[in-house]
Image 1 (tube, one colour):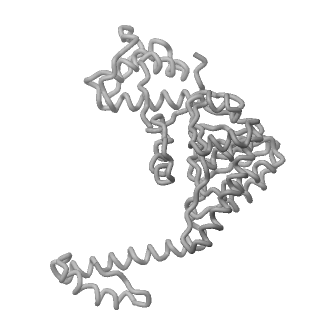
Image 2 (cartoon, rainbow, N blue to C red; image 1 turned 180 degrees about the vertical axis):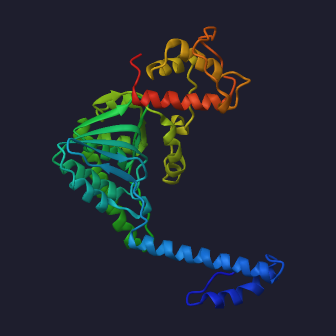
Image 3 (cartoon, rainbow, N blue to C red; image 1 turned 45 degrees about the vertical axis):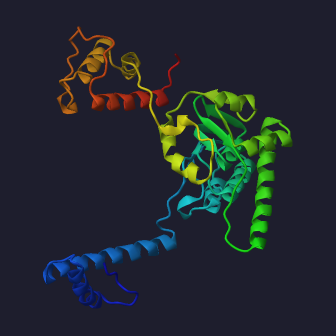
Length: 341
C-alpha cells in the first residue's frame, strides 16, 4: 500500500496511488481506488499532526497523578516510571509545587527508569511535607526504593514488595558499557543506602537480597523493616498488566498472586456489602436471589420485590454476567469501606 512522500501534494499522491492499488488488487476500479487513496492521505495527515503534537509535548501521557490540596495532597504512581516520554523532571516540578503539610503517596508500580526513580526518591525525601507511602499493589525494583521516601510506609496486606539489582541497556563501545556499569553501581549504592536507612540491615544483608531478586509479602516486608504498618487488602487484578513488563525487564521470580485472578466471594459476603450500602436484610437477600436466578441472565430483566421473603440466604451463582457484576460491587465496596471482620 503506497504512502505519501515527504513533499508530495495530495493531488500528486492520489495520481500516483490509484494505479498502484488497482494493480495490487486492493481496488476493483478507479472510483474505489480513488476512495482508498483519499483515505490513505487523510490517515497519513492525522498521523503527521499527532506526531507534531507529541514532539511539542502536548500529547505526552503521565505515568503518575498528583492532586495538590491545602491539607493533604495525593500522589499516585500507578504505571511504569519514565514511559510515554515524561521523565522525573516533570514529576519533581509538580512535587515541589505542593504546599500542603502532608502527602499521601500511593504506589502500584513495577519499576521503570532507574535513574528517574532515584531522582524521584531524593526529591520526595527532601520535600518538607510529611509523606506517607501506601503500597497498594506492587512496589518492585526502583519503585521499592521510592516507597521508602515516606516517613511511614503502609503496605496492603496482599501487596508485593520486590528488590533487585538495577539494570540498564547501552549500545556503544566497550568504554561506553564500562561507564554504564559504573553508573549502575552508583545507583545500586544509592538503593542500598535507602534500604539500609529504613530497615537497619547491614550493607551485606541488603546486597544479598538484591542479588537474589527478593520478593516479599506484607508480613515479610514488615519483618525485614521495609514497612511500618500492614493495611487492608486491595484488589490485585490491576497488577496483572505489569506481568509482561516485568518479564521484559528480566524479573525471574514473578509471584503467581500477580496473575490478576479474583477469588469468588460467597453470597453472604455480597449480602453484607449490600447491607453496608443501605439495603435492608430482606432486600439484600431478594437482590441476590433474583441476580443469581438462571432465568434472569439478562441484567435488564432484573426485578426486585422487597416484599418477597422466601429468598434463600446463600445462593449459588448461576449467571457469569451476574457474578461479574456483583464481584465488582464487592471489590469496590471493600476498597471504599474495608470490612472489620
